[in-house]
Image (cartoon, rainbow, N blue to C red; front, side, top):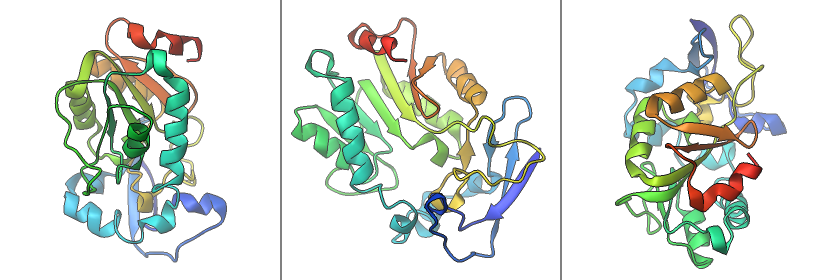
Length: 238
C-alpha cells in the first residue's frame, strides 16, 4: 500500500543538520502491511548506469562523507576485534564494499579479504570466486531494489559453514502506514530504496533457508543449518 513520498534529495546527512536544496522530484515509497517491508518501486527499473548517474556520482560524498575512510576503518577495527586470530575466517568477502578500502585494511592486517561492488571500479575490486566462510555486507541491503536477487547471490557465494554479517537499520516503530515518512534512514539520495522491518528481514532469510540473529537494530547474522563452529564465540554476544 502507499506509504508516502519524499523529495529525491532527502538524505541521511539531514540528521546532522545538513540539507541539500530540494530536487523538486518526488520518490514514492510503498509498504507491505503484512511484514512492514517498504520500498521505492521506481528504482526497480533503473539500470546500473542510472544509479551511477543520479546517486553514486561525484556528489555522493556530500550525503555520505564517511563512506570512503571513516566507515571502512571503523568496520575493519570491529571485524578484527570480533574475529581475532583463533577465529579468523579462511577467506572473507566484503560484498558491496564501495571502493574497497575495508578489504585493503584487512589485507594489511593479514586477512585473505576480497572487496566487490558492482557500482565501483578500481584496483581494490576483485570479482568474487568460489565460496567464502565470511561475507560482510555493510550498508548494502537498503541500497538494493531486488532484495531476493541479492539474497540469492549471497547464498551462492556463501561457504557451507559460512556466515553473513550484514548491517542495515530496521524500521520498527519508524515507518508505519498513515504516518508521514520522516525517518532519517528513508533517504533516496543515499540510495536507500529498500527499508526492512525486523519481520521482513527474517522472512527474507527464511525464504533463503538461513537462520538469523541480531546484535542490535542494525547488525545481523545469517547462516545455514548449524551455526558455524569457527564463529561460535559470536553466539554469546548475539
